[in-house]
Length: 155
Length: 127
View 1 (cartoon, each protein chain N blue to C red):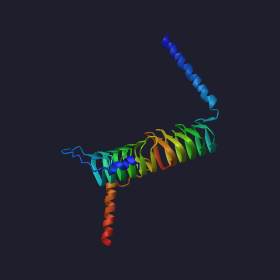
View 2 (view 1 turned 120 degrees about the vertical axis):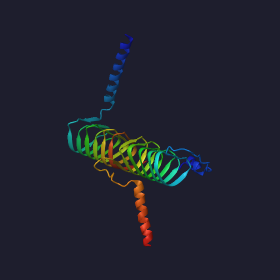
View 3 (view 1 turned 60 degrees about the vertical axis):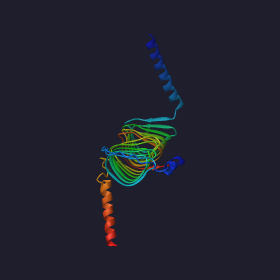
View 4 (view 1 turned 180 degrees about the horizontal axis):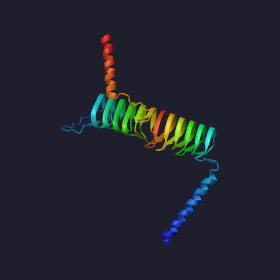
């Protein structure tokens, strides 16, 4: 992590802007903000902070300061930041030069700009080799939770 | 008259430019569309490949044209792919064009991928 990025993390928590009366289904995670959990049903998600968990949004934009851990699914996805996990795009996926991705990518249309770092598996949706029958991330997480609960009950 | 004069000049420049390339890069190999090779191709400078190859291909610069098919291993510094590849690719600079179809393992230092290409592969990045 560069010192510049480190500084933004240590900044005092700035007052969160309230989008009162906003029904545009927009998620905006500012730089330096950390979120853990699940985002579902969003239309536009703009991530400059750090998000761990699952996100399902038709339009996802992970900016260069953004860090994502987990499963991401959407139609139109642009990655300029760090990703560790799965990316599932059913339309356009653009990976910019500053991006650093570790994990599995499933795409329909993929553009990678020179300089991007990608480590992992790339699968084209609709190809014979595609595994698009995989559960979507939200269902997958539910299933994992169920298994964990069952294990707890056993104990 | 002046317009005609300038266009004539442009043509002249272009011809000289092409001539220079051929003169400087004598080690350019071009393998045409209807060629079929089982085995390995190795060159020092530049390979322009449009045919069918089952085997290995190694050169510093490799250009796989849009109707080419390679099954095997491709090793080079700068590799541009417009055709179909089934196998391993080792490249410092890898350019995947929109018509490309790739299956296999890709090891690279720098990559760019154009919209429209079909890739089912494992990517290994090294700096």
